[in-house]
Amino acid sequence: MLKLPAFFFRINYYQIKYLIILFSLFASFLNPIYGQTNLYTNADFIKKLYNDPNYLIFKEKIYKEFKHSHSVYWGEFIKGVNEDLYTKQKIIAFTFDACGREKSYAYDSQLINFLRKQKIPSTLFITGQWIDENYETFLELSKDPLFEIENHGFYHRPCCSNGKSIYGIQGTKNISEAVDEIEANAQKIERITGKKPRFYRSATAYTDEICTKIAKKIGITIVSYHVLAGDAIPFAPKSAIIKNVIHNLKSGPIIIMHFNHPKWNTYEAMQEIVPELKRQGYSFVKLENISPKKNNTQKHRLPI
Ligand SMILES: [Zn+2]
Image 1 (cartoon, rainbow, N blue to C red):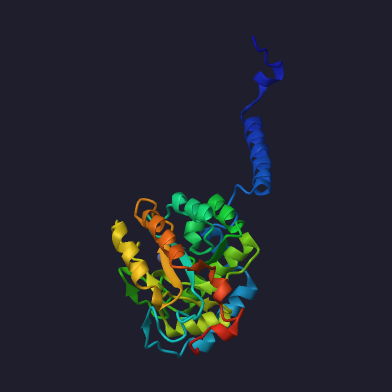
Image 2: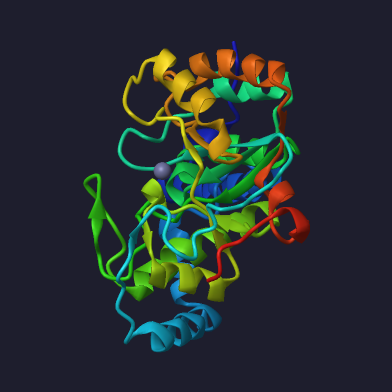
């Protein structure tokens, strides 16, 4: 029988507490080393930013610049949104959003594994909330060169300077919230991955023209889409998603889909979409590969 040393029976309450603290310290020391702990949860990260003088000065500067501006336009394709990336090549840029509202935190591993198996480079637009719920998966995706990580907002709120809503989702209410929505998530992604996102897609893809100007100041390009797959409509039939994509390819190269709804039909539709696109001679690129900065001769960008 196991014999415990005599001192073990003399440990009192305070010693136990002391041992627990020591163990916790040891665990917190190990966690970052093995990348198991999210040190950048939305709640903590925004607190840190609000204590960062540089961030506050930056926000104040943006506020002063736009405080007298009034937005006129609100939509997915307003002036300044870079939906008009253009190429004459027969290429497709699949973009997959991971939103972050209630019940939208799931991870479609079947879809991601399918993209890996088929070697389809893809751009993933991800919210701060989704990162918090899927931290290790996020790390794994960010290390995979097949994927480009981009910004889908800190709280998944449509970017707006005065609080408009769309599809029942409340947009940011003022300039301060708009800056947080874009820049806080950009900084969070950069802090975790070492790479600052170049593109931002507003939640629902709706935005106003003040946000496009704020984004420009931040140095990030707002992207909408050309082809709406319709996979974000709950349980949209596979056949409808396939039809939406295949029939609208001439609109442009950017296709919007989602990878946060494994129970819906994105993966099922992609199993037929990808072979069909390959049969038609399309190749696949990440968004950064068709951005104006890489090759100005093949793209057209709406003036901001
Ligand atoms: Zn979304």
